[in-house]
Amino acid sequence: MAKGHRSQIKRERNANKDTRPKAKVSYARVSPTKAKIVLDTIRGKDVASAIGILAYTPRNGARIIEKVLKSAVANAENNNGLDPAKLFVQEAYANKGPTMKRIRPRAQGRAYRIEKKTSHITIVLNEK
Image (cartoon, rainbow, N blue to C red; front, side, top):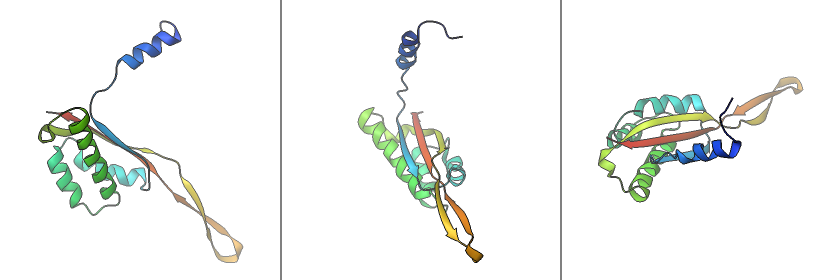
């Protein structure tokens, strides 16, 4: 059981704000599995090498992830006043978004379902 009143618990939870710079894209048109493969390559790397890796990665979703990473760097620079040269990718993950269901006509009046998956991609940076 939780200790304290509901409002007290919420107040304590909201007091622990995460000040690390981050960026998130919601409903990205890439499946979370494909995005995770690309995110695994940049996790733990410094920002300059991560952008270089993404620029030459031919995988699906690399362009979207590159945009999110550049947005996180801009957030760190403008909102937190951090030096982009000292930043590295601390967390990078893709959560499952809603799936768009489409119908594909098949032989003899049948219909097959096509699932177009989406994901929510988040990148969290930190200073060395």
